[in-house]
Structure formats: C-alpha cells, structure tokens
Image (tube, rainbow, N blue to C red; front, side, top):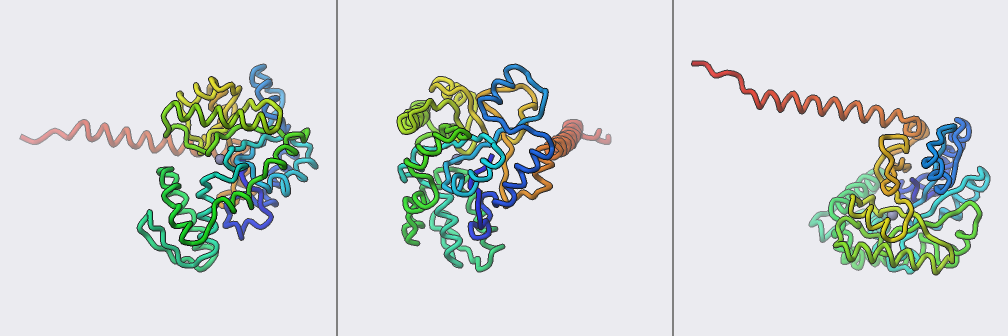
Length: 320
Ligand SMILES: [Zn+2]
C-alpha cells in the first residue's frame, strides 16, 4: 500500500515514500523472484489456490499526481501492473484533505496554534516538524470529525484545501489518461474519503455508489475494486461494498494474503512510508518476519495478561 511517491520526501515531511525506497521495493521484489500481478490476477490465483510462485499487488490510495509523474516511469520499467483507488472529492477538489492542510501548516510555520485542540506547538527544525505533524495526524485519526474542525485553523493560516487538492491530486483528464494505461486499474475510495464505519448505513451506501458511478462515467470502464478510506470497515461495510457491485475491497490491516482465512472484502495490505520504513524493514515486512515477530510479542503479552488476571482472580488465602 502506497500513497504519495515523493522526489523530495524531506520537504513533504516524510508523509509518503521516497522515490528511492519505492524503486528499491520493486527491485527487491524482482530480485527475490516475486511476480508483480494485477489485483484481478491476484484474485484469480487466490480462487484457484495457485501457490506456484510468490506474488505481490501494488496499490496506491487517493490518486496523487506523483503516482503518474514519479512512480509511473518506474512501474513501466518493471512492467508492473498497479491499482489506484480514487475518492471523487480529490478530482472535484472538494475533498476535506485535512492531512494535506496539516502538512502545509506545519511546513510553513514554526509556531502553530490548533484552536480545535486548544494547544500550541513550536517546531523550527525538520525533526520537530515531523514529530508535531505525527502528533496532529494521530489526533485526527482518533476521531475523524476532528478533520472538519480544523477548517478554522486552515482559514486563519490562509491555507486552501481546494488549492492543495489541485496541487497534489490528479485531475479528471489525467485520471482518464491513466485509466487507459495498460498497467493501470482504477478503484473506488468513496466520494468524500469517509470513514465508512462512522456513518449510518444510508450515507455509507451513498458514498460507495456515487463514487463508483462517478468514476465509471469518467473513465468509461467498470470500477470493480474498493479501498475503505482509513481502513474503516467491518462486516457491515463489507456487505455494503458487495451490495454496491464491488468484487473486492482492501483494508489497512497489516497482513499477507496467505494469513488465515481469506475474505475478499477485507483484504490485508502491507503499508510503506518513508517515515517508518527502510530497505530492511521492507524486506522484513514482505518476508513475514515482522508479522511473525509482532504475533509472537502479542502472544507473550496476552499470556502475561492472562497470568496477571488469574492471580487477581485467586487472591492468596487469608490468614486466620
Ligand atoms: Zn485514502
């Protein structure tokens, strides 16, 4: 799972993946004998339980311009198929892209006041800016309504989300052109990049259906695959995705397709970003080493919790 593929990831405060790490990822896959296949082919292989060769699917969320200007020439060189999941609001420039607004705010200022948070930050160097942006992003991820509450802060700072949408996201013409590229597939990502699980069923259904109709009209091709924005999904969203005519849906749940029972409407992914990843962490993620370690640590901590709980449940016998 990729988002932005950046030529200068420092100036973008490490919010995407650097072009160097992106290229390394593809060269590693090739060197290690992995096939890079389209999502369609992946689903066919899964249905046929074809385990003859390791394979990977490359996905990009949100439809950033750099997916075409930076990543596409590399993808062409590796003859690598890929999927781009696009929310309507990115193309119509109406997206409440709070994450772009926050990045712009932190990048352009050393003193930041977030009214909705009731807090001020001072960040004058690269490291403190990355740390502050990380804190702000996490704050919104705890409750997505906070994204909209940042509008006043952006207004006061003269930051226009619509202008940022225009600067960073593909426009309609560019998406039409990308959809005609033999390596590219376009998937749905809702109208407003909504956290579907927080919406009522009618609104969630509308978000899915309107985005799918919009994309199909624009690119004149069927749109059959979905990514849940923020990975916000559960059994209800899986059902709604199926009902909206999608054939698969990806989450942000970390994992490999071979892990456990396969649910075509809750496919796991392996996320890559320059803020957290390096060449060696990519290899560890792909080999499953990282997941194996996480599982081991989680089991150990679970066992510890059980031990503590049983100790509490059986207090020592009282004297007397
Ligand atoms: Zn997204």
